[in-house]
Length: 164
Image (cartoon, rainbow, N blue to C red; front, side, top):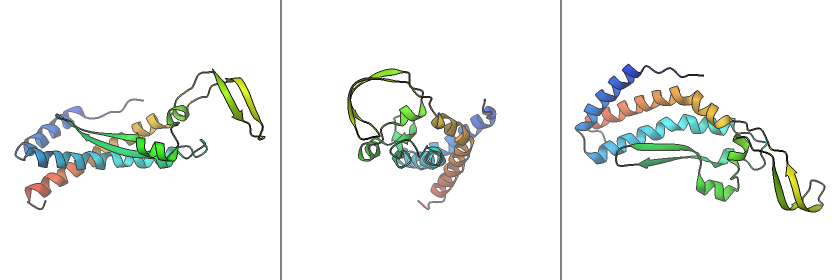
């Protein structure tokens, strides 16, 4: 499943935006890019929460968040499980639900559904992953790019008009 993006148009828009940003201070550029990137990742986070399975033990939906980092040459955003939320809500099993797990041995003490505690080594059959994270990322990519472009243009115009 390929995603078609007009690269010539994208390159032209990037060059035009780059020229408009060059006249601004580094601090203002960083603020504009951070706002634009955060706005672009919002649809992905919303869809991740909507597509996360509710029957995966503890609720994964409440653990998704966005992290925006400013690097020397770029502004980066990551949507996924927030580490702090993962610890607080005890739902650190996203990778087990999303990706395949191989059959493996589990050793320890476990309480069964009948309430009886059993100890020993058990053979886990493995699971088939639901792969909703990658599917969600692919389905929201065009929307996110459009939101990024609109927010970036709006922020540049606001800065140019001196309304910041």
